[in-house]
Amino acid sequence: MKRFIPFLPKPATVPVIRLSGTISAGQRGLNDEGLAPLIERAFKSKPAAVALLINSPGGSAVQSSLIAARIRRLAAEKKIPVHAFVEDVAASGGYWLACAGDDIWVDQSSIVGSIGVIFASFGFPELLARQGVERRVVTAGKSKSFADPFLPQKPEDVERLKALQTPIHQAFIDHVKASRGARLSATADLFNADVWVGQGAADVGLVDGVAHIVPKLKEVYGEKVKLVPYGRKRSLMQRFGLAMVDQTLGAIEDRALWARYGL
Image (cartoon, rainbow, N blue to C red; front, side, top):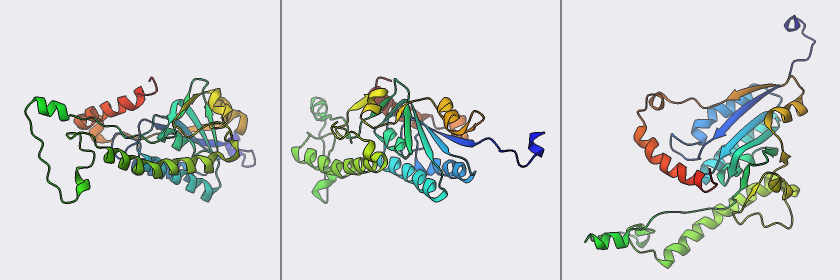
């Protein structure tokens, strides 16, 4: 009968956008192109708020920035609050996404932080030499062989990598400061890529406290709040296993990212 009585208040609706996995431009990861329709649809539904459910060890700095910027732009345009909830981990790019929320809530065992930038690769020069393989490189422009894994590591390459990482790291720091503001600890060293767990992250201001999504949103929007899950749909190729090679190679990189946090 309630649906026929127009003056009765309707329960608040909160779309829940799941952001789970590594962040990359490829089909297998979280990226702005794949998430854009889902994020736009969530904000277009005129909800009381939007919730982000995050479980990510990070990945691409650019994709992290694009996704977070889209969320903040829509939140500002439509004047809709955004609440971020962390599951196992929101580290590196995962924490960049969490900072798209007006507030951030974690489990007591959630891993948060890693505000830094990393470049990792392998080197094989001695292996090639033992096998009698000669590496031949001809370039137009000396930087074309920059960080070649088949050549010995050069000090100038290391310095150049650090120079590339510095502005990316600064962009990350600026994003965190803009999001968290005065809530950040003035004494803790927050930007050296350390991680914090649960309440420890709250103590230094990286998150707002320990809370789970359902009880917290019921506390804020009432017992009858309606949570609507928004998740990515797998493509036809993914459903039929036709992207097996890409997934197999990508899984190695993904596994390495998750393993850094013991997961």
